[in-house]
Image (cartoon, rainbow, N blue to C red; front, top):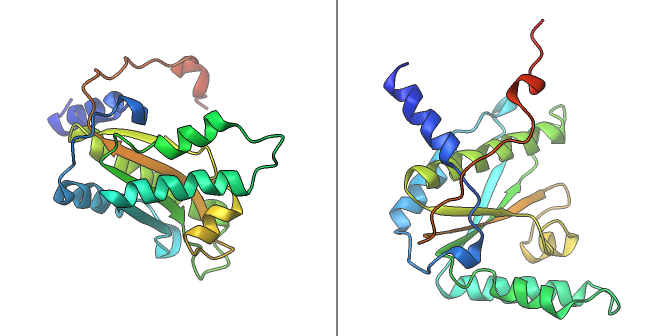
Length: 194
């Protein structure tokens, strides 16, 4: 096999989810973050709508985002469902991350393109970003919990009704080795040759 394929295979097979508490607080140089965001920009896109968008938080802005996220949870959760532990988790989720990136799909102006395709394109952009992070030794976590999918998050980010938040990405470095990868369902069960 050629070297480029092997290098790509290694990056794809090495990508792992590293939860933010396992990050060590070391800072990613902004230039490197810009480089992996630029990789995201090369995702496939139907009709050249390029629907992926990223809101980047760094430094003190991470604490501000996490506080706002936790407060959204408090404001939009019924008292009988509210959990102090979840509030604290959201409040401190970014404590050891270098950057927090909210990824969302900005619906294009071509109504003939289904929203699902715009979401898929944005997901591809996120995967490009995660693979770029892996290649640079950056730990990553694609979170969808808390208020990520709640309309209040869209309001906080000043998004339009037709836009969709796809997740909150926590990026940083980790001293812990990445866990080994596994697949539960065999490759052969996922592919049907005709």
